[in-house]
Image 1 (cartoon, rainbow, N blue to C red):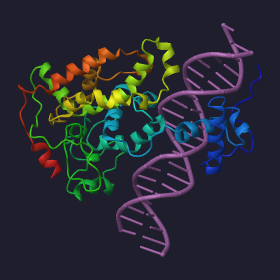
Image 2 (image 1 turned 120 degrees about the horizontal axis):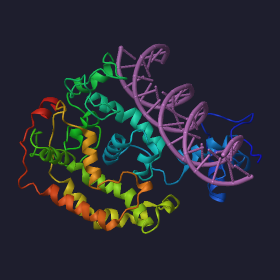
Image 3 (image 1 turned 180 degrees about the vertical axis):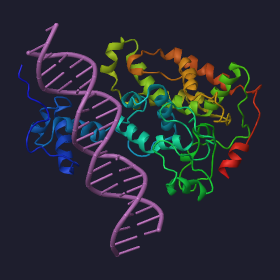
Image 4 (image 1 turned 30 degrees about the vertical axis):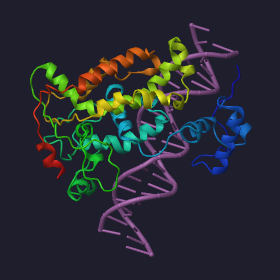
Length: 344
DNA sequence: AACAGTCTCAACCGCCTCGAG
DNA sequence: TCTCGAGGCGGTTGAGACTGT
């Protein structure tokens, strides 16, 4: 037993990778495949630590990595999974095909975390910040300096909140706001069917919560299914322990399933169901909303350890979509006041 | 144009888990 | 059973880009 340590050695280069180094690494991996990272630097002619090579490959050079702006659906998935899983970036990234854990982590830290704080939501607990009397107004909180003009300018100067500064609730609710420099993140229009929370029975509250998420669930399901069904299709009926070994299937193989034959379900669910709710309402619990959704198998809590029955999942989704779009006795008031105040 | 402050994200660091020896 | 290295993961850093004055 005389293994040599991975990252000791003089003359190892650090810092940004050059294109030349990238070429060497790509070329080597194309020829020999991944793995054996300790030996790769030497064999590929790189003065880098094996660990550094692995990271460079996994986070940047790998051909199927998706880069660039996160979609609305991806944002929703990150937020929801973070609420239930915490900083488990690798777990979250598994639900986002072609995204890396590092990228998800960076996006959370630089965008989503701030946005939640701005809207008075504690990014750790995903519950309204206790000290925040008005969630629609940026407040001083952890990592947030209200003397920072940029925080105030964003809304006071623009006269409206950009989608990125919208409350999570609103961005989940088909709200469309004036947005000159960005493609709207949701194709839905500002619904005429705006609903308020009603403090009634727990069932009503659950329905409220579900309805709140309904407009985005379609998108989320589509996106999540990409990741989940790829794996379930691949796995089933494989035992769980085989799962991780077989999960490297390209999503393209299942694109027809994800995007055509079942797109109608997602479309149904994206339809004109929207509402707002009052974050001041101490009973609102985003984590609970997630639990509710998870309990109905709309999202898989951790596909890496779960084998999924595809038919069962589709039954659930179909059932839920029918439930969600059946608003014949939609029990909530319409109310645009909240966004009228904050978006105009 | 120059400078300062802020933001972004690639890359590093250190810890943890797992498995080989 | 114990030790140690590889690989994986989450937290943090800092260089470069961007923005405001």
